[in-house]
Amino acid sequence: MKNKQDLLPPLKEWCEALRDVHTFAPEAIIAGGALRDLNTGVKVKDIDIFLQYTDKLYEELCNMFGEENISDLNEFSEEQYETLNCMMGGVWEIKTKYTSTPVQIISIMDFGGPKKQMKRFDIGLCKLCHDGVQYKTDPEEFFTDLEEKTFTIYCKDMDVKWVNRSLKHAHRLGKKYPDYVAYLVTEVLL
Image (cartoon, rainbow, N blue to C red; front, top):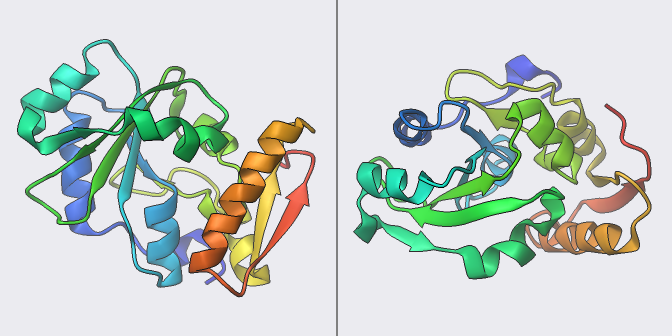
């Protein structure tokens, strides 16, 4: 696997859930771990859908999926998603009729679309996003990490706190990918 055409598309069930979200958030994308794990043959834990936060987002989620199918993950979101280096709006897990795999809705205050979101992802192996029809960014960093068996950490600057969070992220990934090693790049290569 060496280029965009080789990437596996998200499962149909994931795209159905995303299509429901698109009715009120057309900019939403599937990104990160689910696509990484799908394309590397590792068991997918959950599906992350990223979108722009709005004041009515929770209400729209309830209208679409039913309040009984939504779990608030905001108390856990800061630590789990802190490597995105952005202002979080809120995180919820939803149950859908399409898939038994948990779907997490991750809202960002200044989402800015797929390219901006991928610049925020800290590790090359995680830099994949799909809009339900096609992959939306150049996955060069993904392929480099895949081929070299690395977790390349792309640091925006030398902020020690941010680098430490990314190293923790790489450590968590190391449990799924024991043959990979972390590699630190101090300048973003985009």
